[in-house]
Image (cartoon, rainbow, N blue to C red; front, side, top):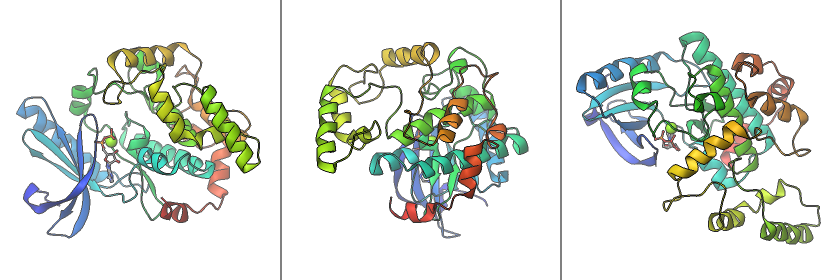
Length: 330
Ligand code: ADP
Ligand code: MG
């Protein structure tokens, strides 16, 4: 497919990230709807050309767990990457709309991402490098796929060691300067799974007194004992309050992490015990999987392929949860 900018008609904006923006477009000659990612590369033209050449690998990635790549081209000073459009968007947006995900969805996300990472590494020797809920996508067929993996060495170099390359999903060893490995992706997946199961990023304040009184009201109305998980049913109200009180992870004026708070968070990731799923609310197999993903030392942490053999993943493969029906609701 010979992709040119003149053949692409913008339909809408899909979102904006640290490194660029994504649009929904129609490829007029074929009538295909695509997602077009526009990345500004602050480098020489020769480097940009090299990046576009390296991005050609995305066309060769064929897996039901990886977003199909249509190709990349240069539109100076931007590099544009065209890929399969996923009509339900990414899981960060989904959980912010619908709240904490059902545990079977969390399991299916774990399964799909582990399969995707295993495919990328075994077949193409690619390490993803940016696992987070916004890079895990859903479509109304009920398929869960990974996007935005680090195929280009040049692009990785231009992002690594910059602020843009700093992520709150980063593993302790990465924060301490070690190179990426598939096991760093596993850490990021563990953090992402807890976030999706709780409907909140796991490195932030626990519920405060006002939150607890909300929970008591909730218990009176619903006639059941409030659990830690219920607290996230009230998460919108609580999030509003959390943003007002002095948080362990202070937010900047735009609601993003400030420089200081990123450093503070990085310190927490390295020094504090890893986050865990709250006890007794999830199947023990789910707790075991997340605990295994969040072992601090990469030597102890398993690879995606090894994690696919854990008992909860097997149970998820056999369970008849209908992802397509669930996707229709979000
Ligand atoms: P980030 O991943 O950091 O949020 P991106 O620029 O990679 O930033 O993506 C911005 C948003 O665009 C994502 O959060 C996601 O919701 C949306 N998006 C990206 N790729 C696709 C796609 N292939 N289909 C549908 N939506 C997408
Ligand atoms: Mg992304």
